[in-house]
Image (tube, rainbow, N blue to C red; front, side, top):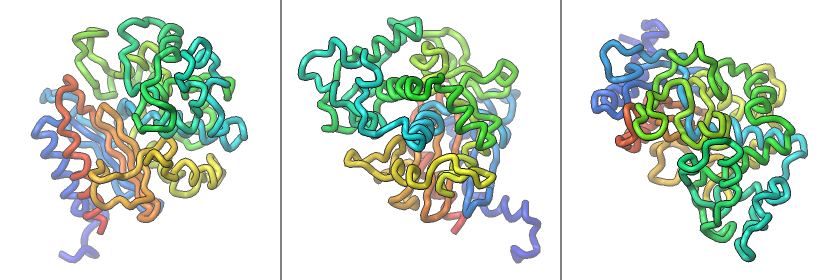
Length: 367
């Protein structure tokens, strides 16, 4: 049957049939119980859909197109990196400012020669600070103040600027630096300058209680909180920090993330044409650094989770819970995948094979 004789929704169903097949196979193989996904191309939404269920139980709620997920580390770009861009536009954040000049506790008492005095905001954004990647601070710290203190005092693992080490610790400290520079908590600053102006009605730290049953659970926690984690941040360090942290804590849905992606693709312009970010700032943060990463954003380095078809100017980010966003300015393309692959526990990492297969299927369908 010629495509011209098919209803538009049927065309969409046929167009992305291979994408659904990839996700259905992943669900059958218990990579994740459900997913929401979406595609933006040339400024238009091509698809937003839900598939599967919140858990593997037959009576679990079905994932809908609008279902909100824990973004995990995708929070780093949706909130913290975006907030840094806003502050840079306002001339309140300078990339080569030293972290110790904003958070003196980072350098006061540091061992001579540790290199901490040379750590800059640019290094935190590019993950080249020399700080450790991840430390279970929540094991010893039960308050936000204690956890931040211990994050500030962690020893360096490498000289600043000498290696790339993806660092949650660096982003915890970057989030606090942004709070100092903005004079507001990270959640309030992001809501006022990014989420609300873009109309992201389903994007927030600490979702309200009435949202929680409509958010897929991320884990049955048997070792720390000893309960099902649903509608509260999965990351334990972020949870001790009150659910608002530079490295994790944002919840959102596909439509909101595609709106943010459209803003990036349109050089920082929001839905009404007003600038959320300056075009030059978008370009600066999307430019790969000597570390091989952009500022806040990842870039496709084979083998990439973005698959084979995202170009060299693409930017994106992954989240531990099974979330991702990838943006390709040359194809005017953005793709979002949200899952709770950590349900019921964190042992399954087969999402590593699903992500590139999913992105390849999307681009091949569009071509």
